[in-house]
Length: 506
Image (cartoon, rainbow, N blue to C red; front, top):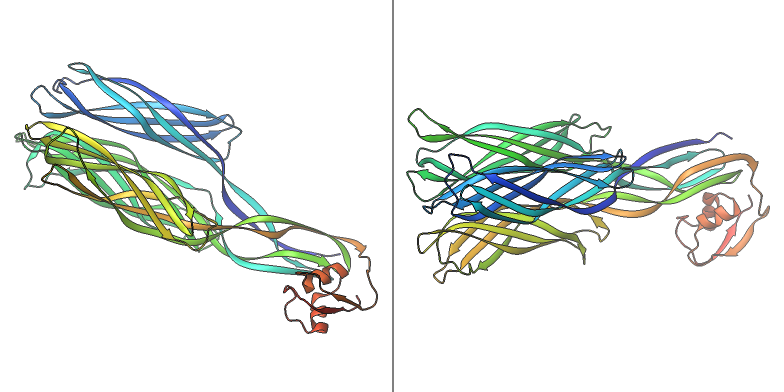
């Protein structure tokens, strides 16, 4: 018998492996000749980055670096800093991950820094690395069955298909001019860069990504004075290839600054009013096709024997996009310090939990607030505090998955008369919400040349069983559901009935 069968392939992003491991850090810095000696270490800022993550048949190979900036006081009590890069490699053994995709997120567990001499520093600590491996799973389902005596029922819905992720390195090489109303640079103390994606849309086979790159510089001016914080934000736009047969795409997109190199330039008059910087960013785009499908959920033949195989499959649908600002506030008591001025505050957010609770998408975490300040004795000091944050918003279903990103938009603070600091951190979170359901679908249909056995040659009268529909009865008696509905004046073959039923002969 000739059977016309049409299929489509559904894809989904499935996590196959999760693991946490540690990498020890043991390194030292010898100060350059132009750096003053160390009298007191205030803070070692450590930023770990995974520069490469590769899946092999033996496991996950991770290569990265820990960028460190040690802020210290020299014997005259002036602020200074020294930079150091500590590379690391880590191999996570697991089952064959070849062909999969992996993400490694390093975080500093602890880092102890001490001066072991006027010009030598030692660092000992550990970073934790969270490793997630996922794969694009594919499943074929039947969307249409046609043939002699074939009856099928379909269910239509809109689904998303996960496509392979796209990674692209973005390089920024530029100069920053110190405004004329600001003093020139004496010493750079801290340099940091952040990047955010504001928009990602699909245009003619390309993903067009737009966002912002923000550079922060804290420097001590020349001549000596109060440290100055300089912030510069510049927009960027990138185009990445995205192969898809659909024009209806949506994206999860993330960007991370992996490396930053800042150098001062001295002009002919001896002033430093120009800074050159090079930054490397890693852009990761997760594309999803949106498509409407009508899958076959059940089928039978009234003429030939049919081998119909059904499975419960996971369908992923797009729910909604979330991009909202929220505020985290706290009153800080810098115990042991009498703060007279704050030169610099920077924040590091960390997402610790996310999920669906009572119909709401909930994101919880901490913000580590770091501050350089002056004391009443005209000394320089550092303190840090952790602030808890929680964000929640209503979503349309409990069976939802999402991966949030939290970034710092702004930090506002004021020092009260009682030496307490009122801090307000404006955060932004963004994520796409996907709804996941399990539904039945026909994944295989084979029709033989053998005729079906006739259960009855004459009309039958029966009473519907509980929750039984015309479709169930017609399938059992190998007769047409449309014919049964017509004889009994029933409109919907799938609607459970509660009455007597006449089943015509087949």
